[in-house]
Structures are given as C-alpha cells and as structure tokens.
Length: 464
Ligand code: DMJ
Image (cartoon, rainbow, N blue to C red; front, side, top):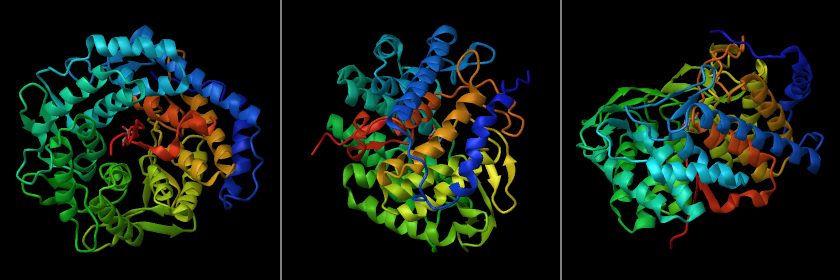
C-alpha cells in the first residue's frame, strides 16, 4: 500500500527554514546562524522524547516480545525463527538517558524474563554484536544489574566459534547453539566492527578470549590492505583473498574505520592508533573528493586508487563524526555541509546520491541516524550553534515525513515520500538518541568519557 506523508503543504515553513540554511549551510560553520534559545532547545528535546515514546508505544501495542514493529500494518517482524528482542535491547539505554523510567522498567523486565541465546539457528555475527552485545553491555554499565553482563557473556561465548577461520577473520554467520559457521565471503565492516563489544566484554569479565579474537580479526584484515593502504568491499575469510576491490567508506566498510579509531580511544591500545593513522591517510588521499557540489568521499579501486564512482549516501554520513572525533574538524565541517545539502535536497536524505550530478541513485530513507550522529559530534566538539540549527531542520523533517499513526516508518522514496512498513531497532538506539542529545544539556551524557559503539550504545572505560 502506498501511503504518502500527510500535510506536505503545511510543511512549507520547514522547507523555508531549510532553504534559508541550505545555500548558506553551505557557508562555513561560524557564519553566524541565529543561536537557538535555551527554551527552544528544551522544546525540541521534548518533541524528540515524545517521538521516542510514540515509537515505543507502537512496539508495546503491536510487537511486544518480537524484534521489530511493522508500523503500517500494525504487526511485527522477527529476524530469526525466534525473537531476540532487538527493539527493547537496542532501545533500553536511550530510555535510561531520556529518563523514561516506566518504559525502561518494562523493557528491562521483558529482556531479563525472556531473552535467551540458547537457540538453534544461525545469526549474523555483526548485527547481533552491534545491537545485542553492545546494547547489553551499555545496559550493564548504565544500570549496574549483573544479569545484563551475564547475558552479554553468554552471547559473546556463543559467537566466538565464528572466529575459527584459517585467517582468524570471522565467518558472517554462526549457529548460537551448535557453533556451526557459514558465510565465508565477508567484508571489512562485518570483520572489523566487533572490537568495542568483544573488547569491553573481556575488560568487564576478565576473560581475554573475546578481546584477542576480535583484535586478531582486525589485524588480519588490516594486513591485507592494498599497497596504497586501502581495503576492498569483499574478502574470503578462509583464504584472505579479496573478491571485490571496490574501496569506499560506505556500507560494508564504514564501521571498520570507525572501530579502528574508537578501539584506540576506548582501550588505549596503540596498535589501533597505528592502523587508524595509516588508514585515514589513504582514505583522505584516494577517497576524499572536492567537487563544485561539495566535499565528499567517493569510491576508488583499492589497488590503483582510480576513482570509480562519485556516490555518497546516508550510511557514509557517519564519517564526519569520525573525522571530528579524531581531531580533523576542518574536514568534518566541510563534509557536514555536504551531508546537510544531501539531506535538504528533497527534504530527507536519500540512501545514495551521485554527487557529480546531484541525482538520487537510491531513493529510500531507512530511518538512519548517521547524519544526526555527525551533527551531534560536531556540535559537542565545536560548540557551533549552526549544528543545532541544521539538526532542527533534519529532525523536524524526519519526524514529519516518517511519523505514522503507530510508530515511525521508513520511506521507499524521499522523492515521493512513499512509505515502507519498517521501523528498524536502530531508530530507537541511534537516530532518536543522537537527535535528543543534540538539544539536551551537556550533562545528559558525558561526551568526553563515552565511546559509542556503531549502534550508539555508550561504552565507558571503567577498567584500568
Ligand atoms: C546501524 O545498524 C549501525 O549504525 C551500522 O553501523 C550501520 N547501519 C545501521 C544504521 O544505519
């Protein structure tokens, strides 16, 4: 069923606000936007919190005990033959941060009463690690209940057989009960986005196996970078041979870079610093692209560095956060201007844009958080009020176009605003969390002491 967003004309005011920012958004941050008053920020944060409650209420009413809400058909979706409670596990720490005590209590009860990983089916190691393991570890750190850590430990142990390949890089899937593995052709994101969770699990339990397995995988992947320092899109974990040389910072590679940087920051392990330093130099040399339309990161051949594609999309938008966190606020600010331009082109960002022609290549919007994530980092690191102004435009349009009677829903197309019956759990874990944090006082979360995993679960170094 094609459903269109309501009140599009009534939304003209927002479009005007976007237009006011857009050309100039493209002017340097620091160009004197009207700072948001404290009262306006409080109201925006309250609207985002109310949006979270609306999303959660939909889950409670129509998808309770399942992985995800189907907002349009008022049903549910499970990823596997049995639910792993993706939405409650992913959303729990956002509830704690927002002070949603009643919601947090019911989510906690559901998780502790019924979440079990003793299941005879294969799961995707990457997704289960970033959503479930990450969610349980942050739940433990924020809430202190040892049952969260026990669940995390059980899950981490069941995932460990995935690392049993000849190279040490994990298979994509592992059966939680039998340990049987499958999916030998993987990618840098799935190989290299396990360290924060497995490392934290080791630090919190005193069992080094998790840290060691995840680190060995990253080191094995890094060792297979090309002579010019880039990685490709697909690699066989049995042989270590690349099966796709397309290099980029987008989905399939993205969080590999994110975790090199953040593993250095969270664990202080200098091997990660070296790998990040060498990787970011190659990325900035071969993938960064200054065009008349803005500053972007495109695709290139990992062996020659030859530009192959001028595409950038919603997933790539995380990269400004990494640049900012690593201290490169100049590139981060330039990239954020492009991201904002991409977002305001059609009112909501598309999944993929060709930045030469500025034509949409893939028109969906999957309720993704990355643009707001980068905006949040830039706002916290620079304090520049322009980032709150940008965020207000992005948040208001996303809530407008994706809100449905029950929950929020992905868009099939940002061009037509036609909807799709899906509310991913990361909408509660990430999108609404970053949005809310941008408009909340710094005390809402100690930004300098926290490392977010790629699903926005905050992890803290509580060990020596
Ligand atoms: C999330 O699951 C994570 O942010 C992941 O790193 C990328 N994809 C989604 C959000 O877009």
